[in-house]
Image (cartoon, rainbow, N blue to C red; front, side, top):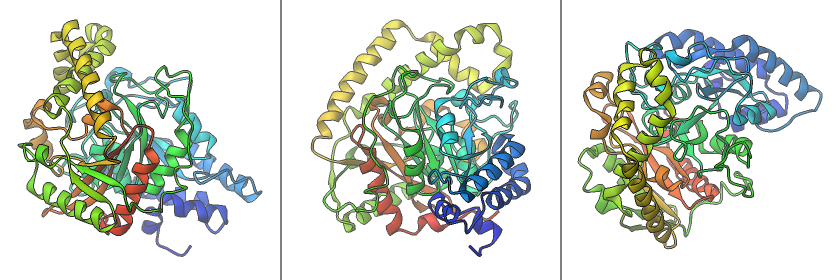
Length: 467
């Protein structure tokens, strides 16, 4: 493969896999290109908390030797990946981007970490995130926040901020994030990459730091839909150590990915979106253009009502805040000084919630789920913008409390449905915009197929930030 070092760092996993398998390209060569790029760019972007260069070189050499003797084990063999720093890694610190865990070194891998290792992936290190996947970015925090490669004065969203920024900047080939209210899809949208939140229970959370046990999802982030399918294939499956893990058959997520979307029924909640006060006009325009493209590709787009739309955000926020406070309560009382100020401000709201509040939200969630299940008998997918507006500056983010922003991703955490974000345009300032597609539970393959069809029919995936 005769390409520049920069082009090498933007090759999709699917292309690297073929080059490695045929021995036209070396895992060591590719890793070296990534490490050189990290050394050159990450002082500005702050995507890595811990860079495991020596370990990665050992793993790349091992992968090269294994492939060389014919022991190729699949499309992740030798591929450099990095993990959001809430996935436990044996012998490597897992900080949750918090001073509280700054020196915490697990003695066991998370299930997802282990599965990626068994698939032959090369671990480059651990990526920046928002504190415990909840605290907003803090410029004076214990760890510096990741910055958006399209404009380093802007946030890469969160909480999987380092994953989104690193992928957009070409600093790793794939990543795993976590998604409790949109933390995979938000960074994907504002960084111009792809992020897939799998069906709740499809991927194990064992060994992943908890934010909200009933809303947390582990899932893949990459620069293409097919690459997300490759990562999902490696980590999906039942794990008895995760009480919420689903024991369901795991299909081949790439088998039908190229079959197109002719005949799929796509619901567009236009009447709801008309009521969203902070939906940016450029985001809405890109979304409408994306709907037209889905129709051109053969999908049947119809206007639908988003079930219980006026209740979803409150229900999701109450459940998340109560469960997060419960998880952190003991440490919050013992070591409040080890938490960031903005994280504390959000977390302490949980102390104001009662058992009645939580149970009322749980009943509301059941009502939402019933209504959504009924809607999904009439359609195959829901299409929405991923994020209400393109990336904002750090100053703008600090001035806008979380409760004042409309979340277009939270509905699918409440219901547990699979949802993906794929690039669908750019703002007048050159900032990425994302299209979100959600499907029925455990029909992740359909979501990936639809996103892939849209992605391949448009050119948004070809753009890169100028670094």
